[in-house]
Image (tube, rainbow, N blue to C red):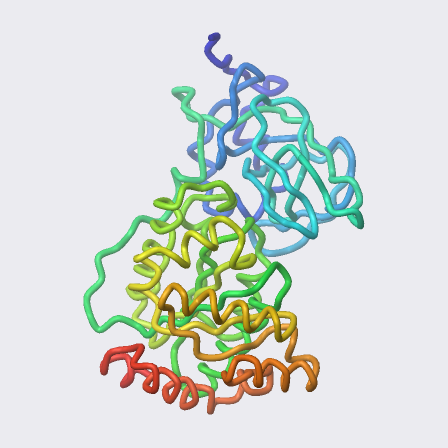
Length: 366
């Protein structure tokens, strides 16, 4: 096998060229000073590799989320810095990291490059990218998001109460549930840190939780991953441990974590059945679109011995669906209005105490 050839783009210094490119959210921890050269088409990309590419065609994603959160319009000919990653999105794209630096697709607005395998029937074709090269250091070693990732910290008690939001499927209302929960807890005078543990790199959910009052807010890109689809479970559990350790190090009162997609998605199913998740999480709010989803989710969590405290999500838009979910599950159904009320802290304390889900130090934290 031939070694990747080092190239200089049009005889320009690579850092100067990248400084003019549109740098995506997934690459926000990237240190420009580390970049020296590009690897050409003999290189076989890996998930997390940083790719300088040119926009060939603008399709579904017509803008790119930049490092600072601004959505920059895309034009044919733009040069962008994105990250390779796999994509799981039943209502958008299924996509994988390609084996070569052949033309590929922009499969997430946060800056994820991959080759689309399938798409939802309502979706437009994806935006197309022409790779220029994978970033490498002066020695020709490819630069990956993992090179700029947070490391797990050793934390000392007392540890923050940790609440998780899990859902029945994509777009079940998980992030909205998490954000309104954060709003209610901060309104009660508590400091809240938040993390999105799994998913596909994009900034919207992170900024939503931050706007609700969480500080700090982290996600899996901070742990070195453009997405968590097809990531081995031991690494997914490590992502959880890294993010939780940094939030505990910030000495917040409560941590709110979101697990993306639905309980049948492979990484979500894996993390819910893991001993590490059970050890970290004190209580769970389940987001669903209807009563059947809420009931099935409750059974799934109970099967794993996980403490479900209430139901929320899209179903709370309908009073009828709320009543059905309450009757089906016997659990509190938490609307946005309930979640944002400072009294949510007392309600959760009662639920946690009744299920004997947390230790006394956590009760004091609430």
